[in-house]
Image (cartoon, rainbow, N blue to C red; front, top):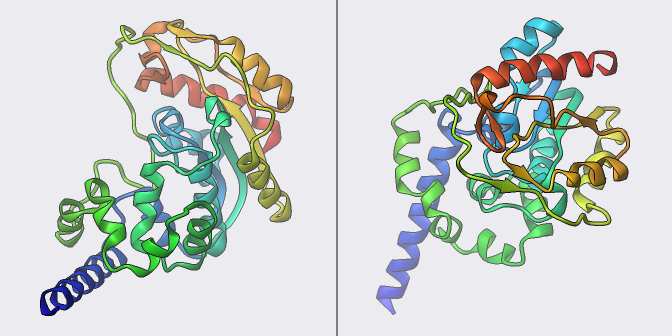
Length: 283
């Protein structure tokens, strides 16, 4: 019995220590950056996956538009993760335009493991708590069992990340900028989009609702794919469902790609300019 009690005390102490470090340390990812941002005015917020993080040079977009922008694209993120980002950002800041990347993420509504891990240290934040409660069946375990949320997400928020946070180690990419350029060109890996498309996406509907209620201008767009990508007619199906979708998926030489679904830095510079000029009258 004493061993069990001692073990539970140890879990509680570790939980408190890990959480305290995450709450007090400088942001090492974009969700932490959002949580540390208060009373800011963002003219433009870019949301999406790595096809946003690797494609949109915010400094270049700033210079073209003379507006304050931020790239919150996260590798592997889905629409559910973007929804949480948006909810957290508008809780304490003013947002006027949201650029949301759409592609085959339209086929998914659940949170990703990456988004889950990043949010877990802050589960007692009201927005994260309500979001987690809505989408996670194991919410009670995550919320009430000491250290459980860290144990099951150890590769992302375990000892290594806690140690880096404690030491004040800066991330490779500044979260306040968010652009993560890729270099090189390798299209040996082939990729393909889905053959069929879902009827609706409830998460996209919720993002639309939030933007409408908050008087936020929502702009939907598609990033480029290389010639190594199959089933590109999926984009046409997506455009049929979402007529306002800005299609920038084609018209880029393969030398501008890092891989089939991601531009390299040279491609990112071109795409940033084309995205700006394609949306100039909308912002």
